[in-house]
Structure formats: C-alpha cells, structure tokens
Image (cartoon, rainbow, N blue to C red):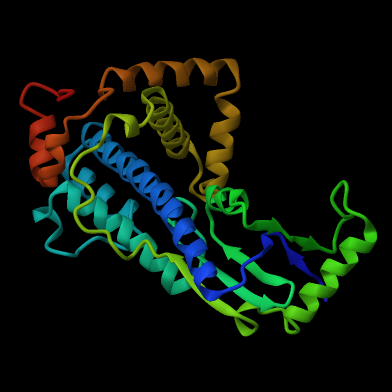
Length: 300
C-alpha cells in the first residue's frame, strides 16, 4: 500500500478531558487565524469590486462583472442583486465559495478556512491526522507542546536524523491503525473549525491593516488590460489560457514592458489607494453613480 501521511502526529493524552482541553486550545488559535483570513479576503473583494466601478466601461458591464466573475454562480440571493449593498454582496461571495467547498469537497485555499482531524486511540497515544488547507493551521498544531510529529511516507527516504528502523516502525503503526487507509473508519472525527458557523455581523468595514497593497492592485489591473489587448488582436481559435501565457511573455520584451508600464500609470490615475468604508453600505448602482459623476470619473 502506498502511504503518504504528511500531517500525521501523536499526542500524549490520558483522558478524554485532556483531549478535549487540547482541542479547545487549538480551536481558539484557529479561530484567530481564520478571522484574519476572513478580513483579508473580504478586504480584497471589496477593493476589487470598487476598482471595477472605475475600470469597467459601462454601468451594465460593472454589474455583470460583479454578478458573474466573483462567485461560482451568478449572485441573486439573499435579495435582488442590484438592491443589495456591497457588504452583503461580499458576504454572499464568501458563502458561495464555502458552500461549493462543502458540496464538492474541492479545495480552495482562498476560502477554505475549515479544519478537522481524525483521532485514533492507541495504547501508545492518540494518533492524529489533521485536515486543513491553511499551512498556518498545521504550524499551530505542531507547535503545541502535547503534539509530536508522526508523519510517514514511503515514496522517498526517511527525514534527516530518522533511522530506517524507526521509519519502518512508523509505517507499521499507521498500517495497523488504518488497515483500509481511511482515517474516519479507524477513529473519531473532530470538527475544529467550521467557517459556515458564526459568520454574522463581521463585515462592517475594511480595517486599515487589511487594505490590499496599492501597487499590487495596479499591477493586477494593468496585466488584466494587457491580456485583454492581446485577446482582441488574436485569432478566436487561439484564445484561452494560452493568451495569459502570451501576455506574461510579452511584458518581458522591451515593447511589452514599456506598454505594461504605461498601463500601470493609467491605472494609478484612475483608482485610489484607499476606498471610503461608507461605500460598503451602498448598492452597486449607488456606487457607480457616486464614483462616475458627471464630468468624468473620480477617485471618490
């Protein structure tokens, strides 16, 4: 049997109460990280959508970009799309991605903030497999004093400092613990953090520490325009992901680099470094009208 237990560990607890206390400690740490990830991703969404309001050529194009490009399916709930304020639209986008993760079990690190583990009791300790997309969660788990690394894989040599005999004992232990290779068949499954729970009243503002980097936004939108320019000049048969690769290569040429630099300056002249949090409480039509006032576009 091919075995790869990258995030296997062993914990030395003697009672259910000790195990529960450890889970509670870990859950508190995870919640703090998950909240940070939530604020960071929602801030990115808010700024992308507000940037779109100044970069899209028409109000309808702005509405359609938000409705179709950010969630996995067109946004219609919780109320008519154009009557929903930006705060709720962003929350809907987050909920949409997380519902898809739950439904399909496909991984999405930008939105997958959940964490659970399988705990398999043994006379030598409780053996744990931690399931999480966020590397920070794994780091927090391994940093707990009760946790001992007990990873194993059989496709490469043992880690430095690990004898072949000890490595073989690990393989035998995991094979004995999980005869069919399925952890949920061998022990308890413990939910550490479910991001679909406790999401009320979180997004009221974009805090200063979560404002996306301005130059990163400029480069993102400038590259988007480079891709669009190349797309418009290509034979339709050649369009697709290859267009992005061609754009990446073109901006490395002298002519491409000069054009990309010019577009970046154009973007800087359009979008501001910081958006007003009051826009979170406005609908998309209200945002468009506020930012595209008579006489030309404004940075708000």
